[in-house]
Each structure stands twice: as C-alpha cells, then as structure tokens.
Image 1: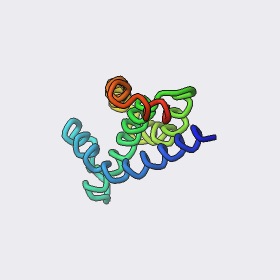
Image 2 (image 1 turned 180 degrees about the vertical axis):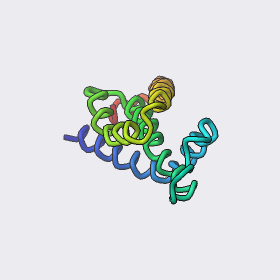
Image 3 (image 1 turned 135 degrees about the horizontal axis):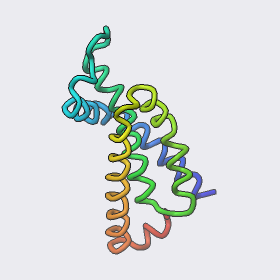
Length: 130
C-alpha cells in the first residue's frame, strides 16, 4: 500500500509541475515548429503554447520521475499517468508524434542516470521509495 501511495503522490506532483512548466515546453515546441502554433484561431499564441506544452511536459516529467523511482509495474504507471497527454498529442498534432516520443526517451535516459547516481549516493532512501 505504501508503494501505491508513493506512485499516486508522484503522479499528482507531476501533473502540478507540468502545469507550471508547460509554457516553457510550449515555447520550445513553437521554436522548433513555428507554423504549428497560432495561425488561424482566435486563441492567443501564449495560450496555444501552454496547451501544446502541457502534454509534452507531462510525458517528459512522468517518464523521468517513474524511471527515477524504478520498482515493479513502472511502465504500467507511466502508461496510465501519461495516457491523457498521449491522447491530447494525437488529437492536436498527429504529424509531430515523434516529439513526445523523443521527450519520453530523454526522460527515460535522465531518470535512469539519476537513479544510478542516487542509488550510489543515498542507497537507503532509494531502497525505501523504490
């Protein structure tokens, strides 16, 4: 039960953190693909950047955090927590689906490296949360 509580709190924390960093992910997306934001709608560009960034941030942060935690059923938790963001990505821009895939791979690599480093530095803490 303790591990489930840790996973649920991690999901909630990643959703909250994604809310706050979504604009930065959206600005980076707008820098890479300038014609896919704005153009032809009444929604301001800053709002479209945030909408594009929320799903990208959520995918990146979820994969990063669950790879940092390790444990049993890690990929199930990642899939469940990221499924709204994946569906939003497929609905908004299916032609650029490789962007969240690349972000997930980057999050996986960084989470794996951080897990290895923290396992060496603070093995007691990592054993409790993993």
